[in-house]
Image (cartoon, rainbow, N blue to C red; front, top):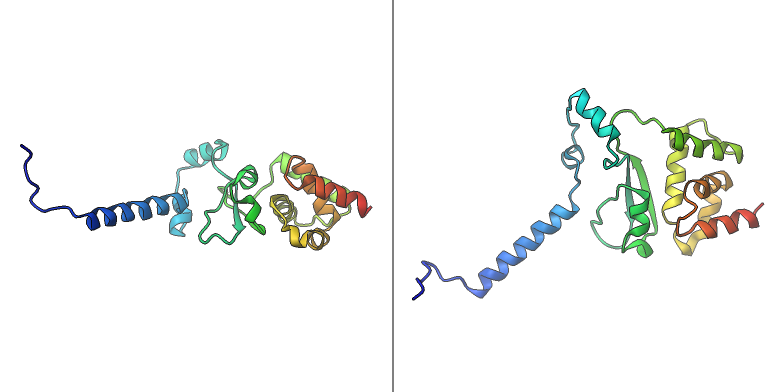
Length: 182
């Protein structure tokens, strides 16, 4: 014999619980993982914790806010995540920003990419901004306005993008454009 529940649970109540659980899970998946990003305020860390986080490869340096028809699409933390996204084909572009710890300084690898832009004749007076432009070009350019966007970025930025990401989904198109406009 099974004991009766003090309050009967109706189908409607179960559906409400399931819906609330689904919304909660969706909110967790879309919420930024960094407390500072979630609250919009800086966090205070000890210097040893900050040094450990800077060395940890799992902490993203950049935030990729991809433009897509999907509302509230969560930002991505790595260029490879942009390319691997199941929604990549719907992206019409991305806005890239630095979200790392401390002041924005280029790594030696990033600085080498900016040198490629300089060798191609690009203005690199603001090296950090130049690298962000290369990252932006390396995400996804809307195919409907591909050649217009490539001209807007310019040959030096596109050359840097090909050097940074020769395996990018649009790298072959970029390379063809560089050859055609040489």
